[in-house]
Image (cartoon, rainbow, N blue to C red; front, side, top):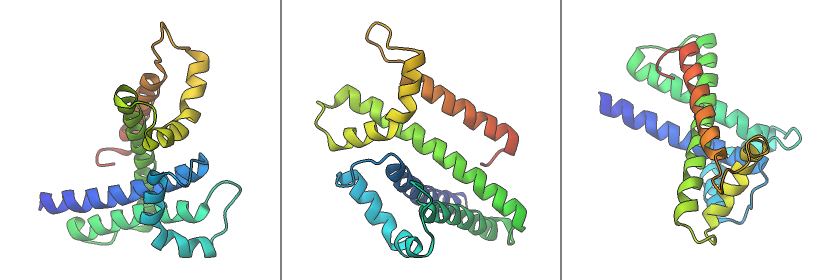
Amino acid sequence: MSAIYFLIDQLFNLYLMAVILRLWLQLARADFYNPVSQFVVKATQPAVGPLRRLIPSIGALDTATLVFAFAVASLKVITISLIFGGGFPPALPLLITALALLISQILTIIFVVLLIRVILSWVSQGNNPMELVMMQLTEPFLAPIRRVIPPIGGLDLSVLIAILAIQAIKMLFGDILGPGI
C-alpha cells in the first residue's frame, strides 16, 4: 500500500511542480523559446489552455495557471484521502491542506531550481540553455541577497542563504500545519 501511495504522491507532485514552473516562467518573463520552457508549456497546455480562455490574467499573473495549480493540489488531497483515508475530506480542511501543499511545492521547486543552478555553475561552460532559464528564474531571489551580502573573495553566498531561508520557512510551515505537508 505504501508503494501505491508513493506513486500517487510523486505523480501529483511532479505535475504540480510543472504547473508551478509554468507560472514562475511567466512571472519571470523567461525565454519562451528555450527548450525547458517549451517542455513545461507543452506538458501543461492541455489543461491550462482552455482555462486561460475562461479566466483572465491579472496583470502579469496568469490566474488560470494559478487556479489550475490549486485544483491539482486539491485533487491530490482528495485522491489520497479517498484511497487511503476512507472518505471525502470536509471542505475547509481540504482547502487549507491544498493551499499548504501548494505553498510547500512552490518552496520545493524554488529549492530544486536553486540546486540545479548551483550544479550547472560547477559543470557548465556557460552555453547551456537550461542554465539561462535557471538564471532568469532565480535572479529575482538572489539579487536582493547579494545587495546585502556581496560575494566574499569571489564566493557567492546568496544561493546558500536562499536555500537556508527556504528550508527554515518549510520547517516553520511543518511546525504550524503538522506532519504530512
